[in-house]
Image 1 (spheres, rainbow, N blue to C red):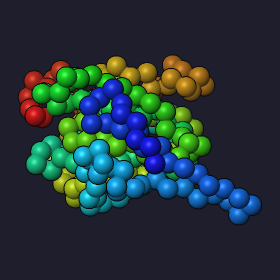
Image 2: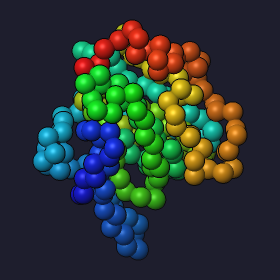
Image 3: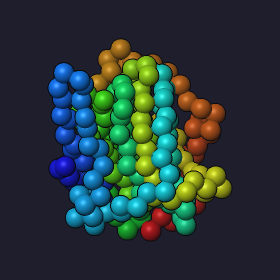
Length: 188
């Protein structure tokens, strides 16, 4: 596996390999020694799979300390614009966002450290993302930032969805703006 550093410190895209033959293919998505060599967390406590229709945006989610966690995310089917926002006050990229495309066609996994909000927009039906998280989910520590307030063009790479009204859960619709959230918290 190759580990590509992203513009937000501590965030990495882990490039896997796909081996194929007449039977189908085989992919390695997770390799603890690759993460450990970068000083990243390698112990994960839970795994989730989400399936979304085209036009759905989920995010921007995170867990507040002391229940915050590192996360690994991979696209198993479909294609998604994945977005990250740095909430760590001591970080040189505090308050900044970045986005990248995750696709089932490209074997890769996104490593997201503690203190980074995460979300994604499904560009096609049956977009399925697989998550590994380093701590057990604590509902009381759930938090989020509204997807319209993070400077991400969610439909970049999906011209058929340009200008579409995103499909959001009631929870995600109610998330505060980035400025409102940062005024009341400290993710050091």
